[in-house]
Image (cartoon, rainbow, N blue to C red; front, side):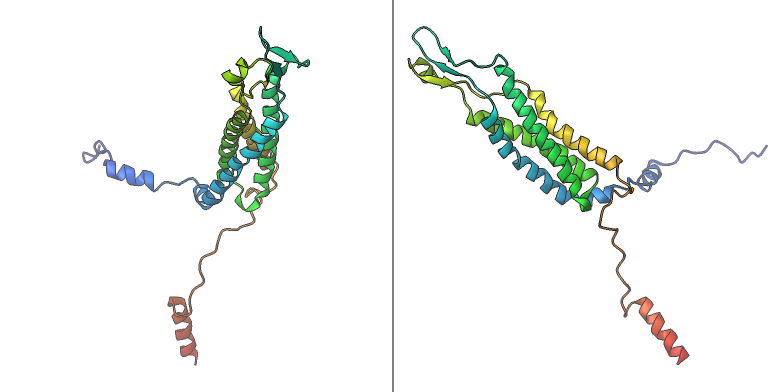
Length: 220
């Protein structure tokens, strides 16, 4: 038995850190960095889309009217029994349409297809839903105490969102459309139209150019 063989000393922590840092990195990191600016722009545009979505919710959501009497408010007309959930239903449908359009629009950005665009779709649609929610409630407030105390006045119920989880509809549908389109893509690069940039051409005065000139001088 070789007496020189013995227990192997463990590698120092610095060597372990260097080996870990020199390991293979995620290949999509460069793509995410390249698409970062466009993804932030996409998320911002989708967030602003919450403004027309909020206006649409405010315009389409049904609300009841009441006439103030000396005894108690009296309903005007014959509102539907599902009036309490109708506002949430309209809000959900508006966000569903927004999510579908956002997913299709994100996939249409051929040069920026990838993980960064997918994350931008989810974040932008979520912020758009929050903005639409706040704008709709701001435009459709409930009656004030002064209006409720005025006999003969006709007041309209306020617009409010009773189901907060409806905010997840737009980001869910946007990511679903994008993922389905990704699975149906025929190429692994998702059809991105910007190939990897090639290295810069060698200058005439560089080492390669000097070698060519030297070889030509020998032949001459």
